[in-house]
Image (tube, rainbow, N blue to C red; front, side, top):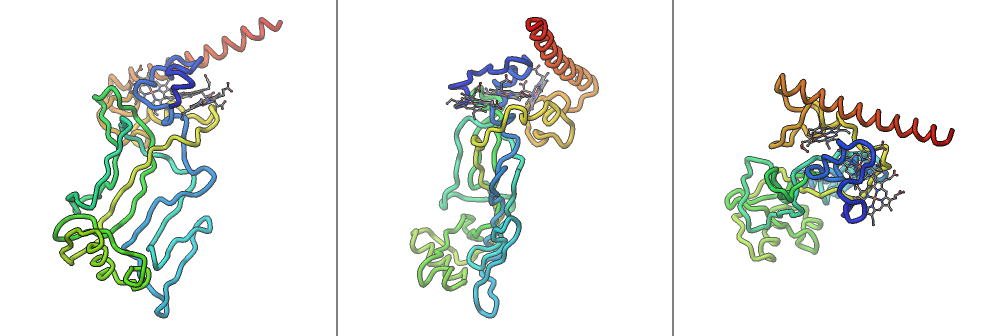
Amino acid sequence: MCVSCHGAKPHKIGRKINDHTDRVACQSCHIPSFAREKPTKMWWDWSLAGKLKDGKPYQEEGKFGKHSYMSKKGEMRWEKNVKPEYFWFNGSIVTLTAKDKIDPSKIVAVSRPVGDKDDENSLIFPFKVHRGKQPYDRINNRLLTPLVSGPEGFWTTFDWESALLTGAEATELPYSGKFDFVETTYTFPITHMVAPAESALTCFECHMRGKGRLAQLAGVYIPGRDYNKWIEIGGLLLIIGSLAGVFLHAAGRILSAKNRRG
Ligand code: HEC
Ligand code: HEC
Ligand code: HEC
């Protein structure tokens, strides 16, 4: 953990930054974006797999020289320099299994972080959210596991019906024979790729109304983001005040360093 080496209050200037570390993970401020050098796959739509040209599978290249389409796997999108999404996180992830019921009228979270604002072990943590579409059983409301390899697999037959049937037989799970595709998400906590200290998030990237980094995060009052006329003005003053404190402190250190040298 970051705190194993740095401690929970690592900031020398700007006391206000240290006030955050009980609720905001180090990674949230110090990893402003991920996949900064190499692209990362953000979208994978299996429902478009199986298209053929002249009866043969094909591939297309898109951004960053990466596949944007493959007959075997469907449509993909790659991104670089992606802003994370932020959730409360206590270190656990729950994952769906092929035996769990899903609600296909909504986006299905194949995996999601566990955490809550009222849990003292939870922090606001950054995540990569990988999105896509995958097959599910329309009658049983469960995700399906197609067989892709081998002579009966999708990559040979390009036929979902048989790939899903043989997949269900292999896993010994029930399959009604009726399938469709549902949008799903998969979450990865982001902890690598700490940026140089000067690239850490600025205060207003979170303390901003509307488009801030934490715009979607519920359950916590964030001055500047949340609107309440009087509290808002107080909150902004608080932030500007603490910012001024940071600068004054820094200026003080520079001046006293100069004095010492002189
Ligand atoms: C609210 C945002 C925020 C959080 C949370 C945060 N930091 Fe920082 N951190 C900053 C900023 C801003 C700087 C100063 C960057 C600069 O030098 O301009 C900084 C600087 C640092 C530095 C360089 C030394 C210094 O004092 O400037 C280290 C090391 C550091 N942070 C580690 C951590 C660790 C470890 C955690 C978690 C315990 C953490 N930070 C949590 C925003 C944050
Ligand atoms: C194994 C110990 C260790 C761990 C774990 C660790 N760090 Fe560091 N970190 C260091 C050392 C050592 C430095 C260099 C300190 C220096 O140069 O004064 C450093 C430097 C930094 C800096 C300043 C970089 C700069 O631009 O000068 C930041 C920010 C930082 N770490 C954040 C983090 C965050 C966030 C995590 C967790 C994801 C983390 N560290 C985990 C040991 C660690
Ligand atoms: C990663 C998003 C993020 C960044 C960046 C950030 N904050 Fe915050 N801030 C929060 C959240 C979330 C809360 C509410 C939770 C809490 O009280 O710690 C908060 C609360 C506050 C509060 C009110 C509570 C208190 O501790 O007084 C102040 C003031 C504040 N931040 C100032 C700052 C300043 C100054 C900076 C820049 C140095 C900054 N924040 C950067 C997310 C952020």
